[in-house]
Image (cartoon, rainbow, N blue to C red; front, side, top):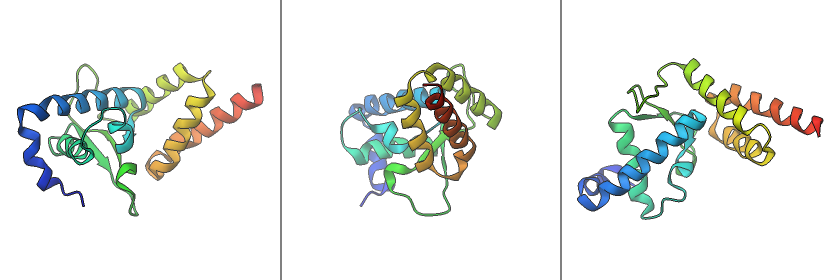
Length: 150
């Protein structure tokens, strides 16, 4: 069973720092593109020890770069949802909900002609819970309008 405290000491080795930075950079891209992400989105494609990758995410929470959106119910580890923390990041900041919303709308504008990507976002939004309910509603309407136009 995964326990952050047991994995935490591994994060501070020279070999793991490269992996940590890779996860961190990927997380920043996900936040910039969508405003929030699941643990599964964060570690997919990076490769390596999944517990170590989970520890990288937990460390980013610990230092305030990201924060976990808590659910009212238990969720599988891969379905944990995160958003930007209150720290400013490389030229962009999502300290206010309106900034997350604006960034997400911009991302949607970029993918509006890609129904597969819209569908994937819709599924991720539904899985991530009620915090992203408005985004899910917006995606549902966008996908419905796209289908109606075709």
